[in-house]
Length: 299
Image (cartoon, rainbow, N blue to C red; front, side, top):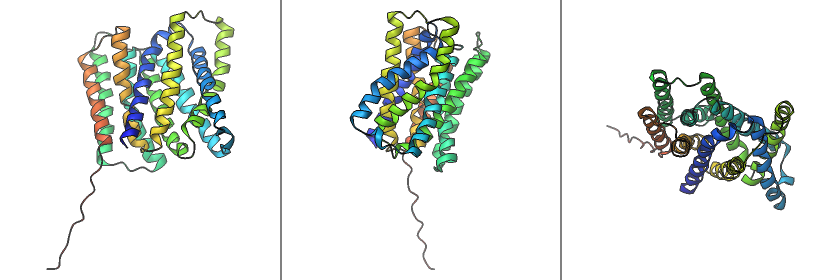
């Protein structure tokens, strides 16, 4: 199980890095063009790998339909909402808002998969939610108000990622990570294509310099291909609810990169939110102790 936890943690550290990297990219590239480029690169890498192993030809139609829903929530909708949100709020706040993903995943896992909501997992939900409350209160009291629309869009991305985790757990038991990630990449490319084409028709093809291309390639390979494969592999061994707790690493990674790489301000409120997110991980992933049976004797 330790290997599964390391795979889930690595995937979420990379995912958090993409939240911060997205900030300078969406300043230069329209959101839907960026989304299309991201998943076109993902598909170009993963489809040949899946075809080489012959695994795409054995995918059942039922699994293909679920994989399409997986792509809609975890690739298309999540990417669209997180990019639109990051364009309107700070990268630090966007990263920290994603700390509510564990809470959303635990709740959806109980509702959709029937996984048990233990006392510890409920505690993790409360801690993750408290982290967001700290950020919300800090921003209201602080000198600079964040964009309400941007933050709400990121919250929408949170629930999209939670649904992605739940659906990935269901189909991931039957599909290997490479074909599943390949199908996700192709479907998301198709979903972004008409929106990207509309943006290009309206504004023309954006001028993308070498630095921005580097960030796009990093976002697509490390943040998508590698993160997808690690995530799907970890989900094959861990409960979706526990896996959701690792998404609290997204704000840790994203906030650090935003602070170090983008020079954004880090406050005591941010630190408190990060601490609560890490406590949520520790609580949700701690093994449950079996209750000893009570011995009864005749008197």
